[in-house]
Amino acid sequence: MRVKIINPNTTASMTETIATAARAVAAPGTEIIAATSPAGPASIEGHYDEAVSVIGLLQEVRRGEAEGADAYVIACFGDPGLLACREIARGPVLGVAEAAMHAASMIATGFSVVTTLARTRIITEHLVRTYGMAHVCRRVRATELPVLELENPASDARRLITAECQRAIEEDGSGAIVLGCAGMADLAEHIAETIGVPVIDGVAAAVKLAEALVGLGLGTSKKGDLAFPLAKPYTGALSDMAPATA
Image (cartoon, rainbow, N blue to C red; front, side, top):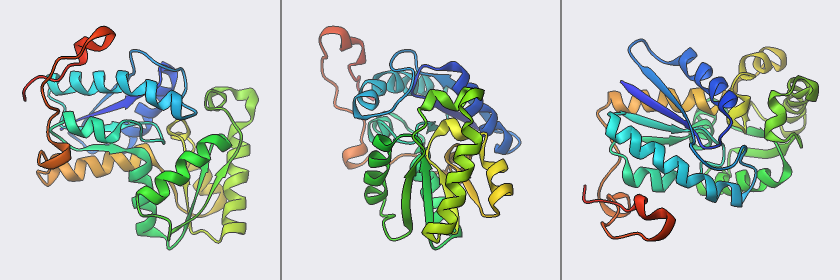
């Protein structure tokens, strides 16, 4: 089984963190193919970043289809371009936010999300409603850490995120924590041991769910709105993105 994990931002070091987390949970026989977006923002921290990142993301899914990937993971907690990627992929496509929230809802009656900036908290709150998780998500918390600061030892990110997770357990009454950034993938085990409740990293959750779906022989439905895009010409700088007949 080949699971392609795509980091929609262009920071290769973050892709390495994501790939390490994915390979740590992958079953024997699962090949993790990690890809960094070929173009776009260095980090994704708003609606504009997300919109621009989708082009590079789609390019990587198209490449994965040509290379025979069985499933895909979008490694950004905003789940950018999720439905567009599902349109062009035969296999399952999972967003890390969707996967993490579903996993958390199965092991706790309430969970909190701890994310980066307040502006991305708003995006996460929208996803909570979209994914039908409003009844189990107690709160979305922001640490005000920019995404790229997660890789800066001087930012004290591990301590700050752990402290916010502890506050979530004490103040929100949550039984589990969802880490609201793929760049936090390497923190889940440490935080869980420190605060004593399950901590879900969406990268790991998405990999295991992808394996399960492929193992069940399930791919993306090609009936209705997730059918392959209609073939038509595209013009200008995006002419090479034109969909062909499936």
